[in-house]
Every structure is written in structure tokens, then in C-alpha cells.
Length: 91
Image 1: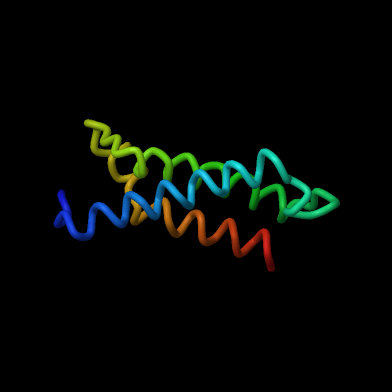
Image 2: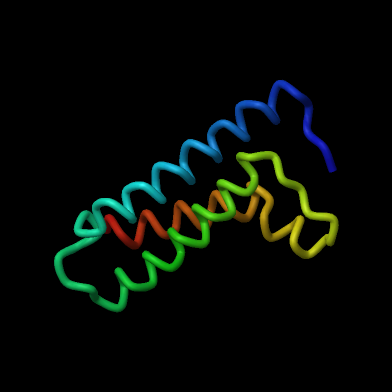
């Protein structure tokens, strides 16, 4: 399952930028999520961590051989997880 090169390059760059920026923000400025850790923010932090890890995995161009991992680490799964985590954190 490959995409055309004109889609794959920008998609990888977007994944890498999103994943690294979320990692940096969560590591250096965790207070941006909130001053008190509520259950919703705790869930958002987990989703953001998983989404950022998957985005970096895709952004660096790594492709697992096993199909379940390939599906779980694809941008079709990772980007909605990031979006849901950001929605929970910012709402």
C-alpha cells in the first residue's frame, strides 16, 4: 500500500513536524495542558503521546513488516488519534 511520491513526502513531513512539536511541548511545557490533572486531561496526554509516537514513526519513514503494526502506525490511524487528543486537551 504505497502512495504517490507527491503525497507521501508532504505527509511524512507533516507527521514528523506534528509528532516532534507535540513531544517537545509535552516535555518542556506540560503545564500548557492544564494546571490540574483531570481524568480528561490524563486521557488527552495518553492519546497525544501515542499519536506523537506514531506520527514520528511515520515521519521518519519507518514501515513495519507485520500488517497489524503497519495499520496501527499509518497516518490514517495516527492523525485522528492526535486530533482527538488535541480536542480533549483544548476543549
